[in-house]
Amino acid sequence: MTHRPLSITTLSLLLLTAGLTLLPSCSSQSTQQGQHQGPQELPVRTLAAGDFSTDNTYPAVIRGEDDAEIRPKVSGFITKVFVTEGQSVNAGQPLFQLDDVTYRAAVSQATASLSAARAALATAQLNQRNSRDLLAKNIISSSNYEEVTNALHSAEAQVTVAQAALVSARESLSFCTVTSPVSGLVGVINYRVGNLVSPQSPSPLTQVSNTRQAFVYFSLSERDLQQLTGGNVSVSAQSLPKVRLRLSDGSEYPEEGTIQGISGVVDKTTGAVTLRVDFPNAAGRLRSGATGTILLPTETRGAILVPQTATIEMLHKKFVYTVDQAGKLTFTEITVSPVDDGQNYTVTSGLKAGDRILVAGTTGVKEGEVIKPLTEEAYAAQQAAIRQQMMGQGAADQH
Image (tube, rainbow, N blue to C red; front, side, top):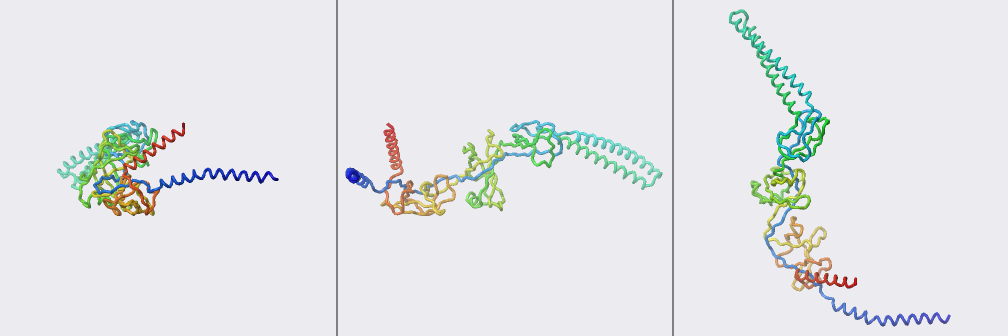
């Protein structure tokens, strides 16, 4: 019973001694930290007005100069496929062969009908000549002669009908060999040997695309079109600036394109106008049906740019911290152009040339705070030195 109070007293004395020993150290550390407190050193940029070129981006669809859907003009079973996907073909080259037995029989029948009609015509001509002689001798009446003449005209008409039927039968027979109407590359082959196809088939046999010149289509809003043309409805499409094309893999097509056509009708559903840009495609890199992004340059004069990373967005509004000569921060609302290059905003109101803005560290400051402004170069050098010091300290700790 007497040992327990002694143990508690001894432990208390030890803890108190340890606390007194550590107190000067903690006090010294707090004093040292207090000595280092002061305005944050942050980068500040002085804004200047200048002329800038930015790219407006618009989704686009690539088409060939000639995109021909290959469909049969007659019905029949496919007996041969002469090409493969991606093959280069010339205009008039056979692509598919359809079963032509029925159509050959139709040609034979039409040929026979024409022969019969010509024989009937020859008989009618002979009767008409004989009737003319008999009429001259008053052996037959004029009405009898007119009947013979009418029979001749009917026989002539039957020959014309038979000739047209033969032409139609031969044409239908020729349609059994499906040829390419244009030169280009063969697309997907949707039907193979043994498939029954017709002009009403839901899908074409294939598609042949001539992409030596690629047609790229994109749409502009009415407002953007007004800005592009300066409100001149009669402006020539060819007089508009050259455009570039970003492909789906993110790379930029090496050739510039020329705007060749502007739709004369505004889409009542989207309120957009379609434009066509022609790109040379000798290497065949652009394929019909592919997608990309049109880069349309826009020149802005006397504009003020601010980095997007320097802005704060709240309630669909954009703000920046402006910095006065004393380093005091003011939370300032700005408005920007809807068109940007992905890195900077073009300011339309809220800032002017000569204003200073905070370009980094915006999340660690507040309205009214005073900072120590640094140039962007000095701030970058300071941060690099800190990172180098931390890397060196980490290496030392590992050893």
